Image (cartoon, rainbow, N blue to C red):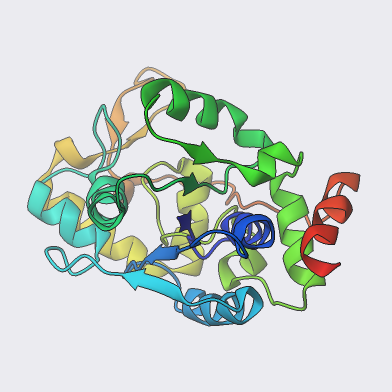
Length: 250
């Protein structure tokens, strides 16, 4: 079961899994729809589906209308000690309900995320998982370049300079990231500010990094002026990706 997130890494991981196992195994491709993702993600999903020559099964959470903001509103917090509840409700629970016993999960972890794979395997020793990108030494920029070489336009969020193509406005981002969201998506920025106004301090996720109030949380509405940070690097490719591409182009 390939978890396709409308990102370059999960797309390449899925393509590699199909090349290796598609003729001998029932390879399923599953995507969790999110209200807060950029609309161009749907275009990318269609292009990827054509590339895969295999249908993508799109799942949608009905309880929260597939919306991170609705999850935050109803749960009355945005980010806690165990992470953000939106990922749990809109992705992990949905995918766990869909998968069957014996499924082997295919993750789009890249070389930069090898520690995440190790952590997952340590926490879930009974759940078989494949990480074709790590196995082949592929990084995030490799995957972006491979998508472009396949003739597929990268999702719009990448083209704006962001590091991933998931939700617009992730609470895991820092000050520079949220300044970029304020510039590029002011309506979404205001929606999160309004929700924090309603919920109160328990929903604040940014912290002062210096000064007399260091480590104290503050609301998004008080985000000071400064540099907006996006992933500015252009797609490039290491020698690993050409070898991996031969697996599905030969």
